[in-house]
Image 1 (cartoon, rainbow, N blue to C red):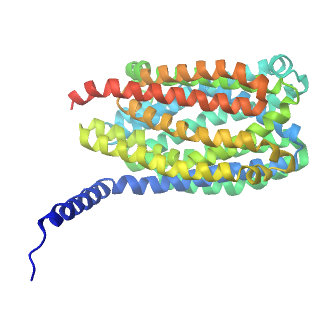
Image 2 (cartoon, one colour):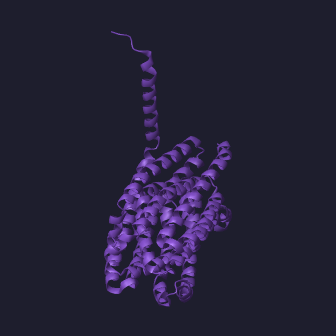
Image 3 (cartoon, helix red, strand yellow):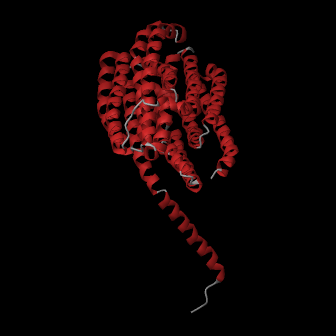
Length: 452
């Protein structure tokens, strides 16, 4: 038998070594992948139900009426982060860190966040009702939208509570429960929203969306009660004043992140609707943006587990596990985003036509927003890594930069290209913010690593 060629041994052994490395990586992240699968399913159902409801509304309503629904949702979205106070991310991070090691503190933080969300949601809902006439007349130049805006105020309080509840369930890593809740909510909300939109127009569509979020709050509460019982956590406000440091170091910067981005998003939306045929342009942008949500839902579903998973690795002092999970998350995000983005761009006229024949002309808006999904995912994943390391203020600074770039570029692009201009400014701002986050993570990770 001839002697084995030595030159073949090294490459072959290298291949085996690569295979062993990949196998070890898969095994070490197997639980993470399992959780990611449930998170993916939950996001798929939730996003699919939302898209289905909006497609039905767009086909039932006139394009301008659909534009009314879109700008009202955007207005509620401006108030939501102010009311939310960064509490959803707070519950995610600290439920993941303390559910095992300190259930008493976990219960205290959960009770504090839920109560704060309810109080802030109610106060901001009252503010929205009082400001509705001014927002409709001065902001939209459409005084007739005042009553519809007041009717949408329930979206705010229920939305804030729903976000904090979901944040807590995410911190418990209760993704199978979240997936089942998404199924039931979708089955109940789609026919209800369609019937109300058909019967009462734009006001009915808003009522259907509000009822959907309210139902989600009830189901989340039942699920959250079960998770607390499972982990031996008893929510209580006793001693909550001791959590002031947590609120200042984490909730406050998370809150500032929301309140700088959301008003800018609303102002840019108002800038769009005040252009010639503005509500129709807003309808085009909203329809295209629903597909962007679909493009990012897979990597975002996986990224939802990033903060609790990375927080656990950091809490345990497992730097190697942290880095491996971070690289896995980033790599998966790009693989899951780029091919669908290219396919969506290629099929953009057909996809926009799903909302109605008049929407097909908005295909360039969809192409731009589809491409923006790439920096959006990078932004989310880098931000999750910073938050899990405790660098919430660096995350807030990047969001401040994002808001500034978004506001400035929209002033230049929206008057020229309407919905396409708003899409372009959105893409540019997320790209700039992603670069800033990458630079911040590189700068801050060296000191973090030295702590082991």
